[in-house]
Structures are given as structure tokens and as C-alpha cells.
Image (cartoon, rainbow, N blue to C red; front, top):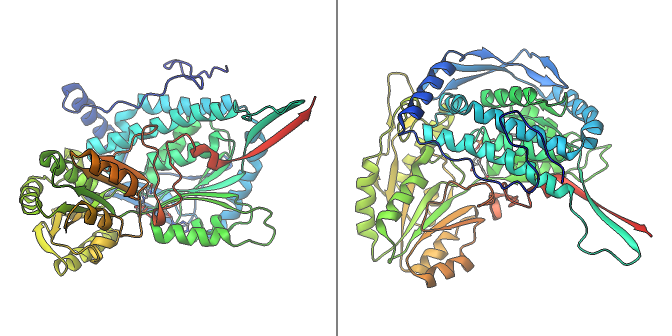
Length: 530
Ligand code: NAD
């Protein structure tokens, strides 16, 4: 069994080295709070730097810039980045193509070692990465920690999975032959992440692609470019060869779509909205002149996720789970609960208790670790407020319903709950991606399941019930990629909860699961007569 050496701080890993999820930081411990405040101060002194695009190891500047700001205080610049236009796609793809022959033939042990070294380096600088997430996207400390922990988990998990895949054999040896199955990389890929898990999803898709031997163009979100630039620098420090990852900050419709459409882009790993995912799917399906393969798309998209609260649920647990799922990181998660479906027999009690619990949520600057902070951008602020106006005509306002003004001009919105919402209302059907929750009354458990399944999405869902019979029904009939019982519907853990959704939520790629790397490979069967 090959052993993979990493930095002096870590133990060597093999495919069999047990994977353990990165533990969460307990910020109530004084030493951790101190470390976090120190990191925030350190990172604050690094804000406003300019970062380059890096293609084939070469630093590049462009005329146009992307300026990333703190959503809690938009006057604070987090970083200035180069804005790649569509014409840079050719250069980026050529650099990735040039790096492919050597990287695809690099031993899997070496490729996995790169991921393990990166995981070690992030672990060493964990609080610093937390701080970047606090400043750039407005995560509170625990949300930032979950994002950093998931990043480490992806690196550790995919490193091990790649080693396992490397050792795979055919299930049967045909008599008189030696049979082998090798998982080969696909080629050059586009990695296009969203802004909301700007570390974990960005790094996870990149790591999965390269550990299999592919080379990529990484085009981060314009709302979270700095965290990607810092990850790229860390990968270089860990030993990333030139051209294996080509960092190109740029707009989606300009640079992003040009890379997707390029005839030599073999695959696209995308996570983001339904609209953009479908556009990528369509563009990638169109064969370009000179293209000699069918492009593969790995598309993880939006959600309109439900929690069902049955008449026999533990209400304390249900209220806490719904609040955490709906308002954790201001509902800006694909897995966020945006519809809670409650049995008519407990509906009024549930609404009263939910209202008083949501009233206690504290909103403010993420640097000070408030439970909820700003939404990501003026565009998102406007969109969420417009849905709140729609909601005022579709339900009974229990909480919030307005923006919160601050002296610094942060993009805050009060946690908002509407009760008595029809299952077909717009706020019960369309992804809002903000702190807005619709409460829907169900006649009984069957009705609740029907309502839960009545959207075009199918990402996450949860059921609160003490009845095994009801949970069994949900196991069969609740049509989502990630189903949870008696717990929140957010917070998937790598390895334990492979993640991906049904229907318009995407291609169900199951990130963080045992099958994920197969999506980045093609299998070659080799039979030798003996
Ligand atoms: P988005 O779709 O606006 O952008 C995602 C990425 O696509 C960005 O990097 C963007 O620049 C790029 N892009 C935009 N237009 C493009 C185009 N025409 N061609 C190529 N690339 C293009 O999404 P977002 O606002 O960054 O993220 C929020 C969305 O992501 C929500 O819908 C959320 O549900 C979804 N999401 C899904 C998952 C999941 O695992 N299913 C996880 C996180 C977020």
C-alpha cells in the first residue's frame, strides 16, 4: 500500500487511513475566541490587496478589475482582482491542455499528497481562513468554521478516494485473462463555484478534478474572489505544478460561458443557480467545430427545501431545527429551509413559538459574531426585499419583513417569517436565497408529504416526528437527495451525508461521497490473454 508523505506536522495517509471529519471549533473557549479575534485583526491588516490571475504559472493583470467588498460595510475593500474577459478563455484552456500530459501521468500518490499538504496548511491557518470568510461574505464565526472544516474534509476525503480508485480492479477475473480497470482523467475542465460556500465548494470541486489527473480553469464567483485567490496561493505553496489549476477571476456570462463553450473543455463542474446551471447544460451540449468528445457536466443547483413538522414532533427540537435551517447564514444556503410544513393540529402553537424564537435572533456585524449578518450584495438585497413584498400579499407576516439600516450601509434584512402561505404561492415555490421562511399548514402527514414534493426542486428535506411509521413513509416518498429526520436540513458532513439533489436541484453528484470522483474520470477496461 502506497504511503503518502505530507508536511512534518501530519501523519502519512494511505487509502485506508481512517477519515475523520474536522472537529468544529468551540468559540466559547476563551483561547479560541482570542485566536479568532487575533486572526480578524491580522486579516484586517491584509485587506485591500491586489491579486493576479494565474494562467500556466504566469501572473496576469487585466484592464478591468473586480473589487470585492465586505457586505457588512461596503466601503471596506477585501481585495481587487483581475477581470478576465471571454478572449482569455483560449489562453487558459491552452495552458490547462499543456499541463495535462504530465499531470495526468503523475502518480496518484503524488496528486493525493498535494491535497493532504493543502489540508495540513489550512489546518495550521484555520482561524485566518475563518476571518477571510467573515470579511468577504459575512459569515458568522461558526458558519465560517463549518466552511473551512468542510474544505479540509473534502481534501482529506478525495485524497483517500483517489488512492482507492487507483487500486480498483474488475469485480471478476475472466479465466485465462488478466483483467484491469483503470480510472483515467477526462482532460481539461472548467470549475465554476458559487459565492455562498466560497471555500468548501470552490476547493472541493477543484480538488476532486485535479486529484483524478485533470487540469482545470478555476473561475470563482465575483462575489467571493479573494478566498479563491488565497486558496490558489496555498495550493502553490503545497506544490501545485504550473497550469494544473489556472485561476481566472471573471464574470460568468463573459469569461465563464466562453470556457464552457470552448471545444477543448472536456467537462464542467458547476455549483450555482438553476438558471445558470441550465444555461451551462445547454451550451455544453452543443458540439463545437473541432470537438471530439461529448462534454460532461456536473451541475449542482438551487433548492426550495422543506421541513415537515408532524403532529407528534418534539416541538422544541423542531423549532430549533427550523430556525437553524432557515436563518443560519441568513438562509443563503442551497439546503436552507424556506418552507416549513406543519400539521394543522399543532399549527397555531407552532406559529406562536416560532414567532417568539425568531424575535430573539440577533442580527449584526459578522466580525462581532452575530447570529445573522448581511446578505451578500445589493443585488441580492433588492431581490430578497422584492420577495418580501410579494410575501406580504401571499401570507401573514410573523417576523421581520424589512431591511435593517446601519451606519456602515451593510446589506441587512431582518429574519422574516410568513404564515398561512399557500403551497403554490411564489414564496413557497421560488428560490429566494435569503432570510425568508414560509409556513404552510397541512391537513395531515400525507398532505404534508405531497406539499413537500410539490416544487420543481429536490435537494434537502427534513421531518420532525416521533412516529416510526411516518418516518418510514418519508423514507420512501419524500423525494429529495438529502433527507434528514429530527434534525436540521442544512450542515451536510463530508463522508456521512454525500450531497446533491434531484430534479431541478441538479445532477445529484453527491459531493463528499464515494461516487463523486467517478464523475471526473473515464474507466478503461484492459484484458490481457495469458
Ligand atoms: P450563480 O448561478 O449566480 O453563479 C454561480 C457561478 O456561475 C458563479 O461563479 C458565476 O460567475 C457563474 N456564472 C454565472 N453565469 C454564468 C454563465 N452564463 N456561464 C458560466 N458561468 C456563469 O449562483 P450564486 O449566486 O453564486 O450561488 C447561489 C446559488 O447556488 C443558489 O441557487 C444556490 O442554491 C446554489 N447552490 C447550490 C449548491 C448545491 O450543492 N446544490 C450549493 C451552493 C449553492
